[in-house]
Length: 272
Length: 350
Image (cartoon, rainbow over all chains, first blue to last red; front, side, top):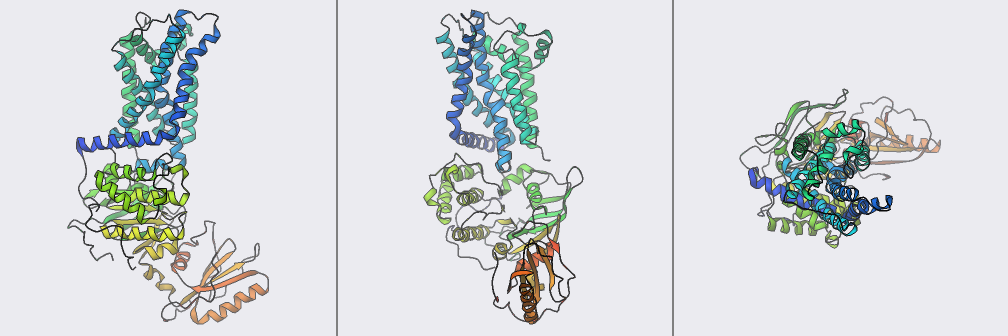
């Protein structure tokens, strides 16, 4: 084999393959930072679409509920206004994220991303930050819409809103992440997230009081994270509206978040 | 090539080694069956074989997406099976599928990958500019991935995989969809990688391209390495022989192969085998007879290439994934000791 003349790369350039391995906090941080940039760039094309869906979901819910009533009962207005933001917070991480992964599995980009030298936890953290960026602004828009639509609505936003939002997004994102990586077949991922979306928007007591559900559904939801996510967020946004045990809500969501996070990282590392 | 050290060869043995790699999927499918190979730094190594031969399975084990059932994979002092995270630092990978860069600008995708791979900012920027020029994709520098043609996207993927190359660079069908001119530019960059001291693993079923690009190659069939060597050593058995390719009339039965027609394989309507140079006349007569009888449409006699060795070893032509049928009995016609292959009598490859 005769080597073609090499013009593009001078041999003294520092691109020669490395012999030293990267490790430690600087490696982690570099992976985290670059993966945040990667995800934001990846989402650029459908950012407008995401914004639209988020507004339809949040603002749409807040305004749409009014169509069911001549005059919206204040308790209803309060529940919807403080529940719809939870949808905004988990939409990207829990529902759209797994679909993106499914899409990448179908198109073949999945293997490539998996082959990049990024610590697993850094990759997960990067995606978490991106889902925060994709969830918090829509939540604020939804709250604004609620404030405008229901002038009598009394919001009392406490500093607890910060940990509440961080925890709810984390739990939702890690659940979605674990799901996306644990299920091999992209079609199954699509199906599961669609069922999840249906159950989430339709049948979990996020935008209405839990007491309105049949008793057995209430007790099921006692152990699922979603009702508790709503409790946490609602408690941070209002004063006196939440009668549920907020401490228990934090506990349940935290346990889900940690378990899902651990499962997500384990699935990411898993070789079949 | 394997033994000649490149200028950047360090004291450590940085060769990529696969030892007895076996992968048995659940359900008992044996995708890799005791594969052993070694790629030196600076060597371009081809992994050839038909679809389903186990090439991708091996690659996925190297980069830690799959775990071998048994066997070892290593680069330098590093065990890639025990430490997939190390494998990802030491290997860079161009998958056969297109890169997920629809919303990226071309240079952005390359530079960001370089940064993810640990490159320093200005070095990555400079190297990106060099690759964009060297691959002649400058006119799409600021275009987004979604607007690129398959070939250009492929070249961008190549640049992403090699902007900060690993010690092992894995290229899975790198030239798919790429136009002939830029293919040459790409191969030049592959050679440049080897000059940098990278071991390059080229996965392909394009035998003709591989013949020109690789230093050594392995032919994989049903999960095993069935032949390994330099392109010329694999061709040695066909020295003094010519390829006789007969395009049979669609639907016509496979003619009985004469004894001098070695290892003919039918793929679709193509019958491919070799004849000794001194029997070329007989071969032409026979093939012409088939055309006259309407059993064949045309035939071609050409210099034998690596493709003929590949056909003999795998029963596949590189361009065809149809199930092949071996034809008749292979006769061991004595190879003449003639020098290089003669000029093709006609060249009718599709």
